[in-house]
Image (cartoon, rainbow, N blue to C red; front, side):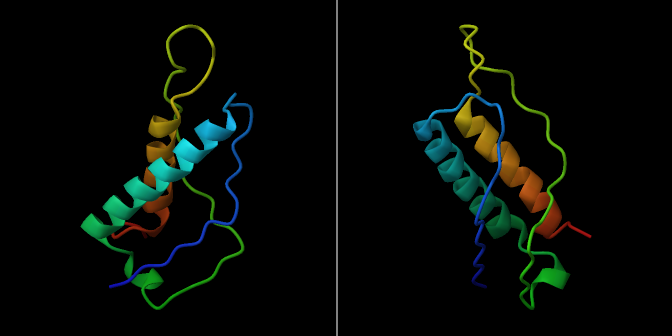
Length: 95
């Protein structure tokens, strides 16, 4: 099965991330969501294809900011958590 998912915009506010951090989030999200979908597939109701103007993922708990007191989040961990949230909406176990 081939899955094509297009995320046009992801809004993350007040996280103190640089442009590089944003790129790391995107790469981590893509890798983790791909892994989750390969392992568990899509929920049955998504398999015929759908287009939605938006999809609100489950609330997620942010990982603690990196050490050093700079208040900067670990972009890789954040991307993986976002992927898990999205997968919770569309993955094989989704309702």
